[in-house]
Length: 245
Image 1 (cartoon, rainbow, N blue to C red):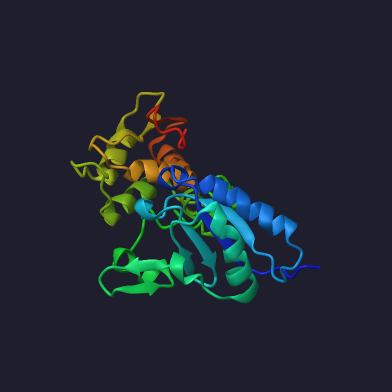
Image 2 (tube, rainbow, N blue to C red):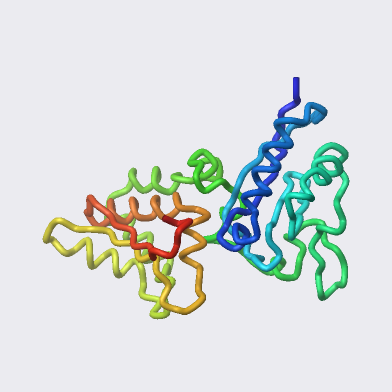
């Protein structure tokens, strides 16, 4: 019987990588892992949201080895399984080439593009299957909601005010003030409307979250609804955001 551990193959299936046939790469990995009987430690294969380096897609990450492969094709799958999955070796030609150090880098986290980044809203994207709620819960998903439901609406709004949280749009409107004004408004019904549309051309912050970590949006909307007294929410998504839809 195969050994089971926390080894994972994460294939980026965000919009950019899908345009480079990443879903076919994902399916090829699934097929190879199902058919190959000589794998001692069989990894879990997952599709994820965007990793951020779309020009280098498809992106494949091997965990906990912390190996990142770029521009992976269907033809590369056998080699990755044979070398990396079975023998714990890297396929050097698929590693990220850092233009600053002029070296191949094993982990994407050490690349100059990623090194200085601290992801907050985007922390789960590229790490979880966006369609698997268990993946989200495993990374503390809905923990904030559980805490919020044990607080009063006033306490939640005060917490948001103290956090200094602002909208992601150009105006940067204080979120706590927005929630407070909605809470104080006594006419009903009230609604939570999440605007998933970007006004800036080529800006895909909202799109990335909707595609790669949709439960974080749902959790935020539920907390907001509870705080302001709304019982229904709407999420606006552009028609051309096929994957988010």
